[in-house]
Image 1 (cartoon, helix red, strand yellow):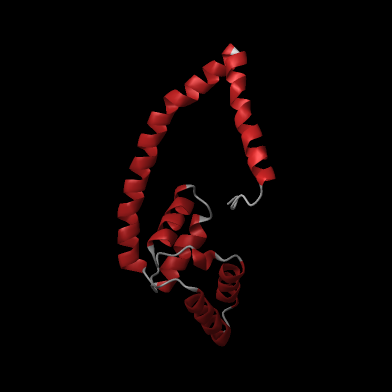
Image 2 (image 1 turned 90 degrees about the vertical axis):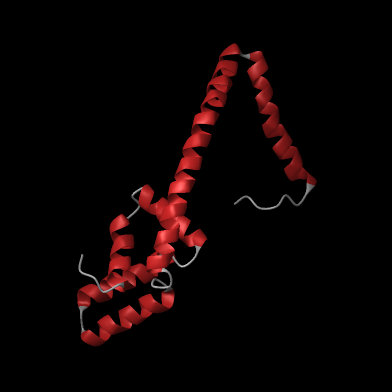
Length: 141
């Protein structure tokens, strides 16, 4: 997130960056690179739209199945339960989920569902995310 542009110096910096596009007129090879990326834009657009549609379907299913299960309060409750039972493995697991903010990877709303699905799509500690959902549902899959 860059944030709002608050003073005119930032506008000047932005315009200076855009001026670099003029380099394509001076160098034919740069023009070739820009054309190449422009030709890829349609394919990437279709890919992004397809991914959004697929993520939308899985986000809706995830919100139905797991909506409200993973939250900071629920993870803290699981941690307190592990402390009461004296289960050191589960204590360290739930403390790790709390300290690394993995409870934010949830299916409680559409935005968090899309972020969670993107994290799973790029295989970003999928075992922690899926383990949290499995533990919250009290399943041993």
